[in-house]
Length: 210
Image 1 (cartoon, rainbow, N blue to C red):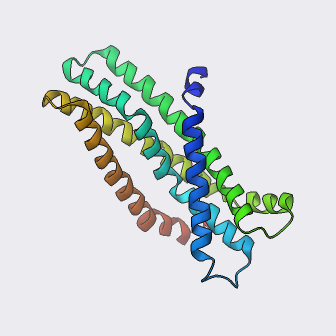
Image 2: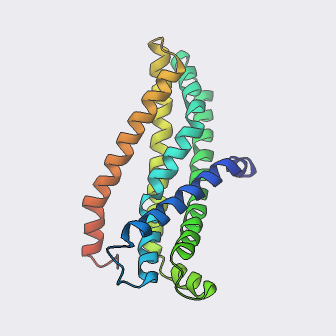
């Protein structure tokens, strides 16, 4: 567990917080003109929920950019010999990295909350923070955690596979990493779009999402 927590380095946490703040502030600024008549706190709640929705995609891509080269090298070793020990190493590495990806979600949402409060302050800071935290939907958070784990696992597996393919074809590791990034981006976006079009309306239709 300590080794897994060590994977959550300050650089990746900082990037996750920066991404969360950027999404939240960008969303608020985008709606600043068209929803001027709407209460600031309502716009803030929307911005935080939007960040919660896009967080799995952002976190999985940040994870790939940082740890993709590690998976590429491991995939190259898989191409040479598929030993039981390598499969064990893969499971250990992937499990720790998925855990670190899940641990980044609270940081990203905390940054989104702070950015929303600073961009359009409405109430006393403490009251505003309580209001925004109270409007975080537990079901939405749960699905966001689930999607983060799935997307992170997929991107790591794609990087592993592309590392093995690059090795078998005699290509440099950078070629495998480039393909892993492009394929992961396409797969994650398609899955996220499918979730938004199919799963979210189904859940909303059953009254599980407010």
